[in-house]
Length: 325
Image (cartoon, rainbow, N blue to C red; front, side, top):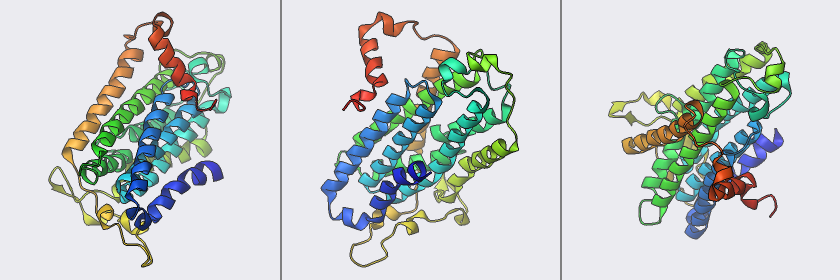
């Protein structure tokens, strides 16, 4: 808990809390935006080839932290903290869901030891799907949509003054495509298809309430936590003002040493074309994986036949050489 819940998120909160300092060092903010963007994209692509369910979710977490850091770099302070808040619920749901899946088979290798688990573990399947939908950012109904789109909107509006953040917006959408692809791939291997390995050897059944009830609570929050910072209007429809915690108050400076980053603490604004672009990213990412796995339209043995595909797969499999480095 200390490592996963505190250490990896402390940097996001620290930078957000010192926003006044970073306002006086725009070059440092640019570096932060680039580091966050690179992290979000690289981690998402690495997750595409992992076969351990916890590693997929771990690299997904790194990628989402990259989105938060990118938001800090472009000055979308509230969006970064909001995504930190919502991400905790749906990613905890997914991580505990992976534990529920592995409780009986004692394996996290979904390519070798899982498959066809949706019928035998329906509650775990339902909560895992809700967590996945929130991570993908299914529009209007999941917490991940409201917080992630606020980050992308921040990149388009706050960084739309010639600072090069349009590139960050495009790369952020590409990262979203990868997110939808690797989670669709994961769902296929774990819950669909035929049971493989240990899942075929064991008589699996749904876990008891001590495991399932926390999953249900987290799945509920994976949807409702996004309502805490809704825009004032969505497609021209006014949203009740009491549905806002005003996240900007959590990171405003409490002293007079640094000026307040007022432009980054504005209430979120719904940007229709950002929502449409996010939906397009979901369709492309999830649709590609659906055609590849569900419909079996992907070329078999691609990495064996094509040296470029083999080299690309190897690069992702070795995590861009980061472990070796």
